[in-house]
Image 1 (cartoon, rainbow, N blue to C red):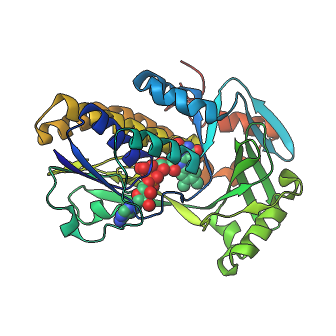
Image 2: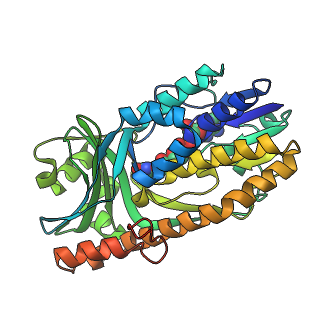
Length: 361
Ligand SMILES: Cc1cc2nc3c(=O)[nH]c(=O)nc-3n(C[C@H](O)[C@H](O)[C@H](O)COP(=O)(O)OP(=O)(O)OC[C@H]3O[C@@H](n4cnc5c(N)ncnc54)[C@H](O)[C@@H]3O)c2cc1C
């Protein structure tokens, strides 16, 4: 079978590896617009539970990845300078590039070398394959090339965020909330390497306007954020990696496939970064799609069975991500609470939709 995989992010790399491992005779072509050693953002974090899927499905890759990760157990919510510890959750983080390089190595072990620095830009390039896997992220060209075949909807959240890094090492995943004359800011920060941390800055639209970010260049933006979070950063600098301000897009698709084209990962749906599950979802999609193709020779039936197996699980996680995003959309209001009540409100934001996330399983 001839397969085109668009995008060499976590979804595309992992799907291609699994499919080729199961079916050495399949011809799988992976096309990626960026160089092999470049990516956006800094680290990604997984909860302990989020890694369990990998241990169950692919012990080999789990054993390769986990020793490279930074691990800790608690989460800290810091408000008005008071840290409140929420214990017993368990997290593991890794640099996004390092993670991709591990997946690239796995893919090389089954004989596939993605074509880097090559952008899919014409619909004709998608012809001539038995299957086209759109793993090309939230702005998927493959999805857009098919008009409204997938019933796509995108709703941008109102908060602004920037995905930065810093050399300051944080011992746990910390959510720091600060207020100044412009309004309210939040940083999600955690180490993803021994001497490097991820630092995602978020604020509401009004705060963003008042701070004047619209007219700042990259260096000015970094400096301003360093000032806002001076106490948290303790003299360390922020670093940028294509770190532009964005509104998080909540992307959904009514249909997961159309003809021989199937969406996986962020091309299929996004999950707000505050629950740290986008990469996990992308990899679980890859596992489910490879399994469906392995048990059903007819492409149409395999794609339907992929969706039938995955949709209920994805919908639960997406509901949790949406609930979490809604809490963040109103974090300035929650900041009226005293630090302990505020931390409780933070913990409660997922209870209705995702009790396992807050430790009630
Ligand atoms: C601020 C922020 C923090 C996050 N933190 C976490 C976290 O802590 N934990 C977590 O699990 N997830 C996190 N995520 C989500 C995670 O980054 C995504 O869910 C994940 O990367 C999705 O993987 P993917 O392979 O589907 O898409 P991507 O990683 O976006 O990969 C898509 C690939 O396709 C390529 N591509 C795009 N268009 C084309 C084209 N036309 N031709 C060729 N190639 C193309 C891109 O260059 C890219 O390499 C975060 C996201 C954000 C925004």
